[in-house]
Length: 125
Image (cartoon, rainbow, N blue to C red):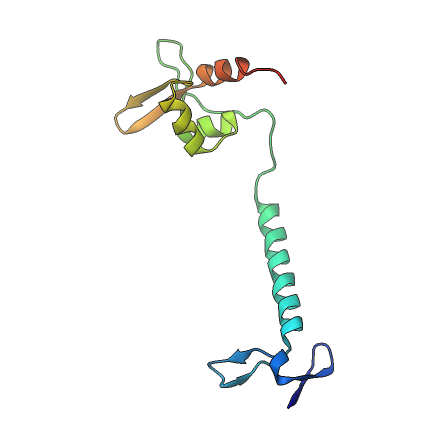
């Protein structure tokens, strides 16, 4: 049997249409047109969400805790933004003792100067 697809305005065999369980019948549009619609919706959503995200900023301003010792301390989230790495990588660097971190109650504070030192010690390519 064939079925008419109003989207591409062609007659196609039933195998070209998805079977729908709720309606107990075939979809009104063919598989190709359905894939094109879904892809267009996905691209539209991606474009909308990419507009909502913040652009990459070179000079990241981070609010720091400045204790009497003169250290620049920041939370994990702020340190990740400052160093431009993920929180997983941040914890890996802390455990490898490449950056310094301090525990204050339940908060982990990272020394931003140690991030600068780590980046300064990286080998040149």
